Image (cartoon, rainbow, N blue to C red):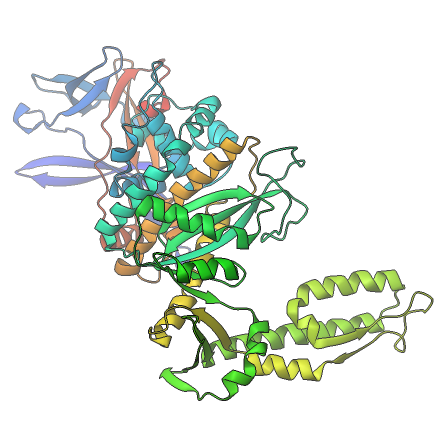
Length: 598
C-alpha cells in the first residue's frame, strides 16, 4: 500500500486529496490500483480563508481541540487554531482489525433495542467494569467467530474493533470478567423472552398462534461428572461417547425463538411437553395456540389432557409409520381428495375423541424419499458385494457390516444378510444377502406418505400439512446453533455456566434470525452467514502520521467499502457511521487500542 493524491483546482486554488491505495493484478497481468482508505484534503493553501481544521483528542491533556493540518513542505498562514505540520513521507498503517461484522452485530443489537433491556439490569460495577459492554462482546463473538472465552480474551478481542465500537479504552478484556458476566445473565432469561416477543411483533408483525416444538442435544468433551445436568443419553450429535444436555426449544413459523429450556442429558423427549406447555402459559398467558410437534414427543396421556382440559390446547403431531399400518384397512375405504397441486389427503375422524387422522400423499416428498432410498440401497448393495470378495475373518466381517449398517440407516432392513456361524469360515457360500422384497414393496408404497394427528378436525388439510412441514424451520435453528454459532462442544463445568453459555448462544441467534428476516424481504437468496462473512472484509486500521514537532497524529479509519458492500448496505437500508475522530499524542506514549493506538 502507498500514499497517493489527486489534485483539483477549485476557485483558482490547487487542492490535494489524499488516499491510501494498493496494487492488484487483474486480467492480462494488468496492475489495477484500488483505494483502501480515503484521507481527504490536507491543507495546501497559504491563505487563512482557504484552510480547514479538524477536531482531535489530545491524550496528554484529555481534551478536544481544533487543529489545522499542513504538509511539512507547505507554509501555514496565521490561524486562530493550532497549526500542525505532518510528515507524509513517514506515514504508516498499523494494527488492522476486523470492523465490518462487529459493526453489523452492534447494529442488529440496536435494532432489537437490547440496550433498553439490559442497561438497568447490568449496571457497571464499583470498579468500573461495564457488564453491558462485555455482554455485547460475548454475543458478537458468538455471532461472528465463535469459540471459547479463553480465545476471546487471548486473541479475538485484540484483533477486532469491538473496543473502538464500544468506546472502550483497553485493548484487552479480562478472562474472569467474561466468566463473571455469564453469572449475571440467567435470572433475566424469562424477562428477555417477553421483551424479544414484543420487539419481533413490532419489527416484523410476527404472529404467535402456531408454535413449533422440538428438542436437540449438545455434548461435552470431558469426563462424566458425578452430579449436574451432564448425562449420557440419546445423542442427536452422533456422540454417544460424550455426556450431554438436552435443549427444548419453541419457535414461531418464521423461526423466531419464543423460549427454551436446558434439561439433563438423559431426559426422554416424551417427558418434556407437559412442563413446557405450563411454562408458556405461565409466561404468555392462555391463548388459542397450535402446537406442532414431531412423533415421539407427546404421550397419549398428554394429548388427552390437551384435548379434554378446561382450556383445550390445539395440536398437530406426526405419527409413527407403525400406526399407519394399523389404520391401513380403514384408510383403504376412503377416497383420495386433492387439496392442492401434487398433494392428496384422506381424513379419518375418530369416534368420540375429537381427533382426526390425516393421511397425506405428496408427489414431491415421494420423489425425494425414493431418491434417498435408492442411493442408500445402491451403496449398501455395492458394499456387500465388496465384502463378499474380500478375504476376512468372521470378526472382521461383523465389524465392517456394522459400519455398513450405520451408513445405510433404515435401508439396511430391506436386505436379508446371512453371516457365517462361529465355526464357519467366510466365503460366498456362508456369507450371503438378498433383498427382502415384501419390505421393499411396503417401503415403496409408503414413500411420500405422512400420517398426521390433530384435534383441529375442522381445519383445512392443506394448512395442516403446510404447518407440519414447517418443522424444518426448527431443524434449521438447531443447525445454525451447532454450525454457524458453534454451540458445541461446551467446555464449562458448572451447570450455571453451561446454561449461561447456551443463553449467550441464544442471544446471538436472536441477532442472526433478525438479520435473516431482513434478508428474506430485502435481499432474498442471501444467508445471514454470507452477509456476516462479506462484512468481515471491512477492516479498521490506524493511520499514523508523525508531526514535525515530535508528536503523532493517529487517524483510525475503516477501509473503503467495495461495490458489493455498498450494494448490500443499500439493500438492507444500512448506513455506515462516520469515520472515528483522530487523536494526537507523543510518539513514545503507549496508547490503548480502544483509543486507536499503534
